[in-house]
Length: 52
Image 1: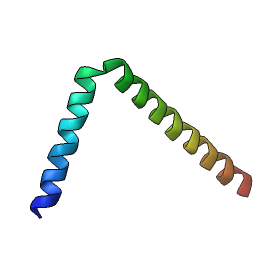
Image 2: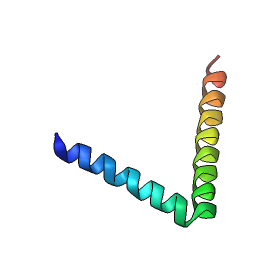
Image 3: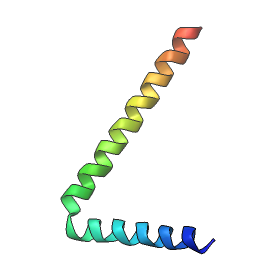
Image 4: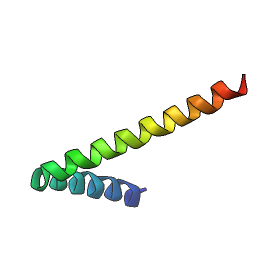
């Protein structure tokens, strides 16, 4: 599985490059992702609570 290994390293290198060259953009991306995950968790909790 060398292709998977190379893709993993390439993705890690891209993330490192992005964080180093665009730290504000990287922070905004992480914040947006965290907000989306939080929103999804809230929606699932609301759904589960409405079943009871």
